[in-house]
Image (cartoon, rainbow, N blue to C red; front, side, top):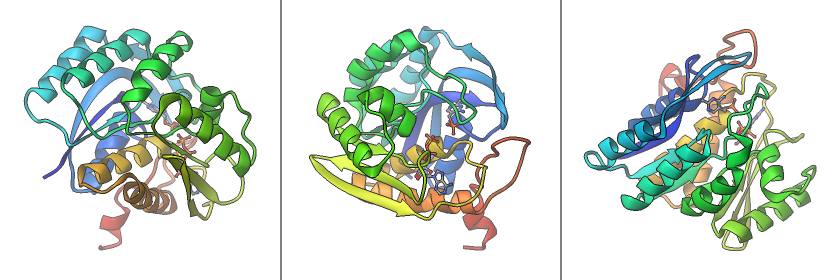
Length: 263
Ligand SMILES: Nc1ncnc2c1ncn2[C@@H]1O[C@H](COP(=O)(O)OP(=O)(O)O)[C@@H](O)[C@H]1O
Ligand SMILES: Cc1ncc(COP(=O)(O)O)c(N)n1
C-alpha cells in the first residue's frame, strides 16, 4: 500500500486541514499519516482560536514518521509560523522527502489568517523550493506574485512569475473566480487548464486541502503531475457535487460519495 504524509493543522470540525487530508487519502486507498503543526478551534462559520505546537514537537513527529514508515508523497498545508517552517524544511531535507505538494494555505474560506505575516519570506524562499507542486488559490497567487487576478490572462501571468521565482510547477485554483471552475497548471513553461462546471454549492470548506491531498495520492501511486491533477480535479468535483449540507456556514465536502453511490 502507498503511504502519504500530511503536515498541516487540525480542524476539529472535520472539514479542512488534517481531517480532510486523511479522509481524502483513505478514499484513495492510501495509508495516511499526519504531522500536526497547530490545533484550530473552528467550524463551518470561522476559525475562533489557534493553538500552535512547539517547533520541537513538530520536528519530533517528523522524525517518528521518516525513521519508520517512509512516505511516498507529502502534502503540506497550514504551517503557521517561521519557526515551524524552519523545522519542516530542515527535516524534509534531512530525510530527502520526495513528491511534495505544498498547499500555500494563508487565509481560510471564512477569511481568517492561517499564517503569520512575518513568515512569508521564509515560506517563499525556503519551503516553496522543496515542492514538486504548489497549489495557491487566487488570493494566495496574488500575494505570491503581486499581480491582481481577475481574468484567465492574469492567472497565466501570475503563474509564470511565481514559477520563474521558485523554479517549480504551480497549479492556480480558480474557485474564487467567476464562470467555470478552471485551474491552471504551469510547468516547465507549458500551461494546461483543468476545467469543470461551477457547482452552485456554498459548502466548499476544505476544497484546497482535499485537492492537494488527492494530488499527493496520485504522485504516491506513481502518476505524473498532470495525471495526478486530472484525477484530483475529478475527485474534488465529485466531492463538492455530492454535497453534505452540514453546519451553519460553509459546510464540508462529502468524501464518501463513491461509497454511497455504490461504486
Ligand atoms: N463551486 C465550485 N464548483 C466546482 N469546483 C469548485 C468550486 N469551488 C472550488 N472548486 C474547485 O475546488 C478546488 C479548490 O479551489 P479553491 O476553492 O479555489 O481553493 P481554496 O480552498 O484553497 O480556496 C479547485 O479545483 C477549484 O476549481
Ligand atoms: C487547519 C486548516 N487548514 C486549512 C484550512 C483552509 O481550508 P479552506 O480554505 O478550505 O477553509 C483551514 N480552514 N483549516
